[in-house]
Length: 317
Image (tube, rainbow, N blue to C red; front, side, top):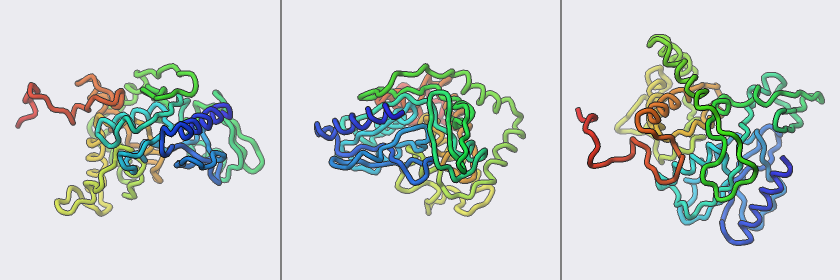
């Protein structure tokens, strides 16, 4: 990993030296070795605290919409992040000519909860290789197989390699098995209607409406969210079963054909609520009905955002 960080530092320095970008969005070390933080580097900044490993939890595409369109942005992207960037470019949230994507093939994001559950929060050391994850807790080293501590979204990832990066640091990885993703969707579809509702109800009722999922999602960039509207009020703002269920259902539909299943929403959730099965199901429908997968290029509109004069009028009541 140190070799990759050295290459990343060199590339960022080159971008500034050649005046290619104004800012680079990456990760930096934090007080806790388990929690690298998003970082925003400008020319002249020291890169000594630059970090990159499998604990980098955030989808950095989330920060693109916070810059004016004329800002030239360099951004570190893995597979899901590159597709989120593409989706934002399609939605005209930042011009592609003012973006420079530094691609890194992704071996998966480590789920902090899976580690902390077996050790504790006060981890003082961390290291990794392709197969193993090691942490130091209370002066004792714990070692895990990588696949046992990856976030669930990474276990079913189909596209670990960045899509159309401007530069790729590292060798491309094998693509994932689409069947793994379909298995999760099919197992949910195999439940009866009552069983599906019971599962949804159990997940939704733990929600405290903190909206951490919304804040972590790069595709939730509206200045005013539907849940904050008044008037018209689209859903209850109080923590009630009806309002909370409506929040999760409407948000999932807003993500149809846009969500790259990066899992940032679930990692941000303090209640560990699992809701990406909803968007995975909707994206499976997009693939089956329209042969469309989110973010695979930076020009194609998602089906629900496009319109052609020869569209069939089946949607007309």
